[in-house]
Length: 457
Image: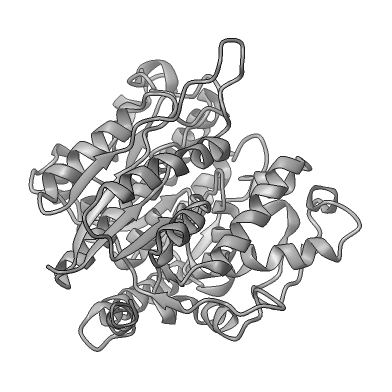
């Protein structure tokens, strides 16, 4: 291997997981890979566990944890997430200088300062966008929208935004960091857009047929008015492969009929209040449909996504007698389950998801209809694209209110699993799975795009 690529995924499991899959793709094409890791500011068992699993499963990939930046002076507040990543630029620079030969740097969109570090060292820098092309198109277009507005997005409430790069969506479906009026967040977003535009190219974890409208908008220059858009390479879907060990829940699935189980999982950071968990439980029980549900403990601080959560006390969190009454209908797992393996099991028939992009792609590549319950980040926009553009899912009403009612959970689960409309949705999902497979095969759009990228670097 005469080429070495350094991957820089920034913070969070959701950003590391697809970057590891990208590392595997580089290896398959004969390119050596080193992953430079940023540890969370708050120690996280989930992050450490993911890194350990990734390193064990990928011995040919070098994982290097960068040292943290200097601690704040006594009495100073710790830096915010984006400031912390900015401070890590110096650590990344030192690490890149220590390597004998770096051919290319591929960085996560949140690590915008990496462009300047790479330019200083004379290294080509490419963005890896771990979300979809549709969100990227909207994100890059927002600065030009802001420049023409006399109010904030938050002031628009549920008013529809009509952009040339996406289907209409409610302003309130934008990520919280975009909705707020914080000048610091605005500056960070503008800087990210600028640095993405300054990169040598953009690798997107999607496949072109899934998001054709957005991909064309990016390539046609609609998203960054007034300046060229870097080359765009759709190289996905890059999703986690199943493990070797068989989890007990898979043995339970083995006893269920084909396409009969609704799988509920809401990501590595998704949590619900006790009240919401009880509504979900009632809805599932009344639906009469089989289910496999991963339950996590409620978070004491909803804004602190990196807290280590205790094991959930199911008897205390769920309705009295629920587990006993539904023991022949469903299975509840504590905190974690083998999502990829569950989604790919013949018995799984639908996926209730928070619409994180990794999970979305895992559901699509498994050929499953999606019940969309967005929680944070860009997930509300992903929900729009899944339902309105891709036609691969339905929304649980009330996702933007305090509680999604049990009646809504019951109704949507029944509809997807046992109605003409639900069966049509299932058929569209199966067709999209075939397109995903074709994209990754030799000669497919994603395979061709990655080969083109390698030729250009």
